Amino acid sequence: MATDLLEKLLHEVSLGKISIKDAKRALEGVDLQKEDFQRAVDHGVFTPAEPGTIIKATISPSGGSALVSLLFIWGIFWVTYWTGTMAYGLMNGWDQQQLSYHLFISLSTIIIMGIVYQKWVLPDLIVVKHERNKFIPEHSQRKYEKDWKEYKV
Image 1: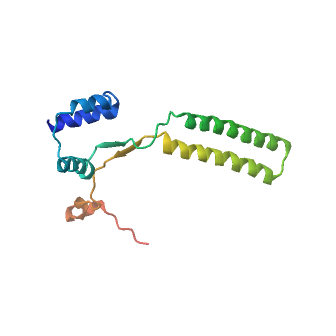
Image 2: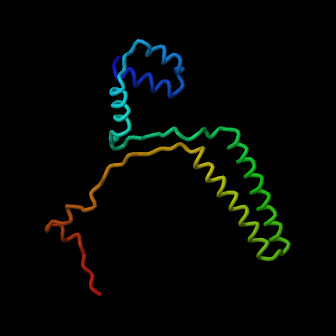
Image 3: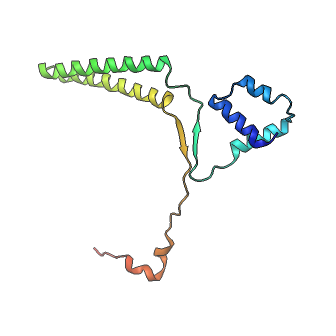
C-alpha cells in the first residue's frame, strides 16, 4: 500500500470522515513491519516543518463540552454579581476595602474564565516562521555610510 494512501486514510480517520472499523477493514491485508511503522512515526514527529506551515495540535479536549459551558455561565453570573455590587457600593459610599474586595473577586473570576478558555477552547496553532538575519549587510558597507548619522552630545 502506498504511503500517501495510508496517510490519507489516517487523516480521514482523524477528521471523522471514516470510522476506525472501516480503516481497520481497509488495512486487513496490508503487511506493515514494526520498523516501517516506527520510521513513519519518527518522520512525522522529528521532520522539521517548512517555513509558513501551520501546525494544529488536537490533544486538548473539545471546547464545546458541558463542563466548559457551565463554567462560562457560572463565571458570567458571578462577574455580573460582583461588579454590580461594586457599582452599588460606589454609589452608596462603601469604604475602599470593601470595594477592592469586590473588584478582586470579579477580576479573579475573569482570570479563571480566561485560563479555561485558553486551555480547553482555543485551538493549539503554531505557525512556523522564517528565521531572519539579525545583521543587515547593506548598512555595513562604505557606500551606505550616508544613511548613518553620528550625533555628538
